[in-house]
Length: 229
Image 1 (cartoon, one colour):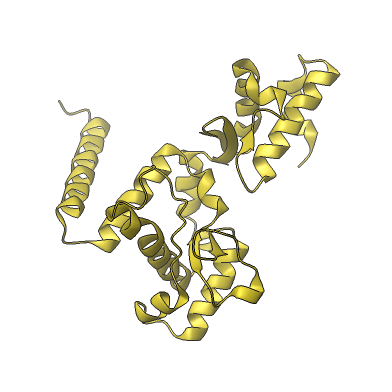
Image 2: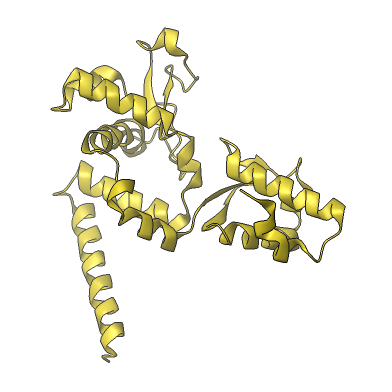
């Protein structure tokens, strides 16, 4: 990515401030975990964060807060456009395996009171045996899907208790959501939570409420387009 793309945004700043802005931009774009404000002056100042937002907007991205740390992610409108592109849709096997991991590592522990924070991070990995038992996919399909999901940063293999595991300990622990889940906007998090409710309990009262809310939103959107009152 050429820095020339941001020249109009950076032009008002001196060399030192430009370097700070570029460093913060590169950090939030490429770090696996949210970046703390301590090491990046441009992330501490609201006015400078707005400049970083302008830089990210030029590449379809936005700044996402996590406590006193920051990371970037796709803007919601850009994410919707990408989701409509067939080449951006992951294989069905990957989606099935990821859904199972989200259900067993996040949704079920949260329902049991083991996860209280509004987060997709989990110290309760979904064992490979559970993925095999709950899926109609073959062992080879599951293993291939897990490799692709790990390469994309969508899942991570950990030992029980949430400690990262290397390839030598694949049989221990299991899988949890990966670092890409840090990059979800608030709206994207809400949509994913709703999809998980529909997948895990399609006949539950919560699922019925999600479907009703979506129907109402669709009617409101159609009414706004038509100009109805």
